[in-house]
Amino acid sequence: MSKKLEGNGLWESSRMMLPQHKEQSMQNQSDQPHLALEPPTKKDLQMMRDFVILPFALKIVEKKSIEVEMSSLTLKLLYSSAAKILAKCMREDVQKSKKILVERHIRVFEDSKDDTELIYRYICRGHEDRFVVTKDFMREEISRRIGSYAKSLIVILQEAMKSK
Image 1 (cartoon, helix red, strand yellow):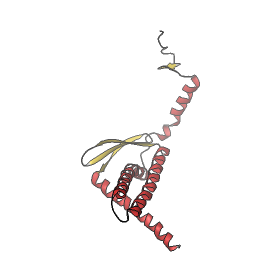
Image 2: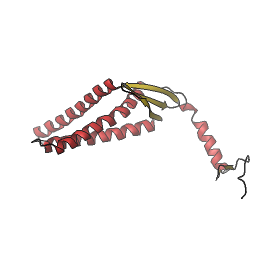
Image 3: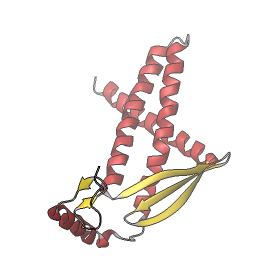
Image 4: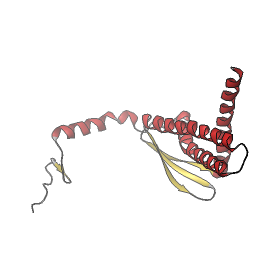
């Protein structure tokens, strides 16, 4: 068998790179300096925090919904239905959060975790850094967010009752 061509710029690995593709790749790289090393804004950091916290809150609501369905509570249908509505709203917000981060050229990765904190690494328009979320803060924030979603649902139900 013959060896792959090397050093002529047309072959990289086992794939052929056409001159047009090479030019387009170089153009894309030269178009991105305006993104380089732009630090995140407060809004960016808040969106990253939402990206981290909302999935945890969603898991809790989904788990509680299943627990209620399996229970012998008299109002389990009401509780379970409300939890499912909350989960649907939260799922939509998780998707929005992901979409916004992609649009703003922000990526977030879990770096490490221990008993007291979670460490996330992010790349925001070329700027790389880390942020720490303590588990105590996470618990408080999840509780606050679930409460906020529940209050929104209650307001909607109250408005529906008034309009009858």
